[in-house]
Length: 102
Image (cartoon, rainbow, N blue to C red; front, top):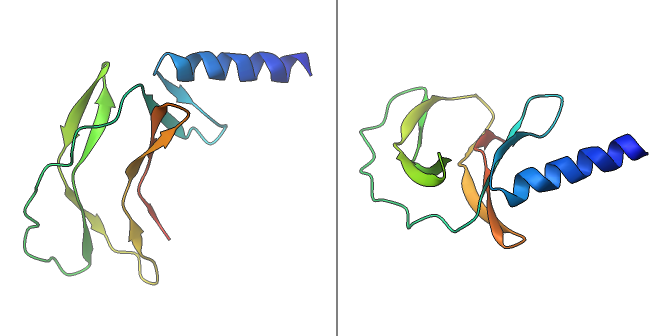
């Protein structure tokens, strides 16, 4: 019980600091930013590529500030749909929800 409480307190401290922390044994990275990201930049989508889907650019949290990550092509997964990553407000801060196949 004490170990779990210590773990939760350590995780809360990382979130408050706006840090990047390892959230689970599967090494999923959780990114928390203390402020909302800037508006998304306009990026022209390149001509379609067979077997790929476009993952538009987004703001990433890097060294205490937002930095633009340009869009790129994702190899298509048959029977799945690409769900782009996005920032979500969470307790007065912002959490990056990574893109994934659904």
